[in-house]
Image 1 (tube, rainbow, N blue to C red):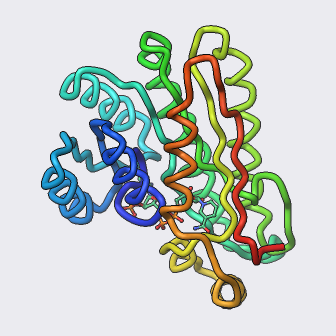
Image 2 (image 1 turned 90 degrees about the vertical axis):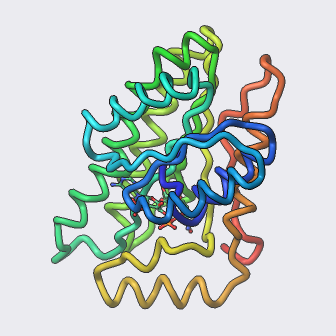
Length: 236
Ligand code: NDP
């Protein structure tokens, strides 16, 4: 489970643990992971906490190796780590684009590549955290849209490649969820719009998305949930 130090990732790790999974939790903030690991262990779950920057390909490979060695295998990879650095394209700070593409796209691709031999061996499951933004482009969200569109394209191509070998690939596409995601937006105007938009609706909780992930990975072998798009009722 990447991006497990907050928001959707932390909630999904807990939901998967509650459903009986052994979990490996990964993110850069090791202090947050340690707190979550203690909580999960107190509930009887076996946990491996891995400090990981998903943009580092070698670290991604090492993390997958460690999970397989220390936990005995890898059945489900949840590629959830992500950034949403909103802003218009004209005059954008392009370092935001680099960070988003490196994290949301390349990090997910590297981890997928590293995990695939294990997922193929165990007929495992790949969960890719996309977004409504991977299906609907909006002004002020172009680079984020591009990153999530890339996630959808890569994942659908992979689905066709591996589904007959028993590996299921699921795209999860949340609408607005109440997490720390908006806190990291660097463009003040874009941040204001995003925060106000979320404040004016009943947003989803991280647990709502965790429920969707648990549903997708709990189906019988012959059922592949390819895509789950979940919007708050109040979101157009
Ligand atoms: P949060 O900001 O709460 O969580 C993002 C997570 O990603 C954190 O755990 C963060 O951990 C991790 N992360 C970011 N960069 C890296 C990196 N380089 N290496 C490893 N981990 C990283 O936001 P959410 O829970 O909302 O976001 C989770 C996913 O859900 C994202 O992919 C996002 O695009 C997607 N999503 C969210 C929506 C929302 O409205 N909240 C809507 C649609 C999709 P750390 O900083 O410790 O590394």
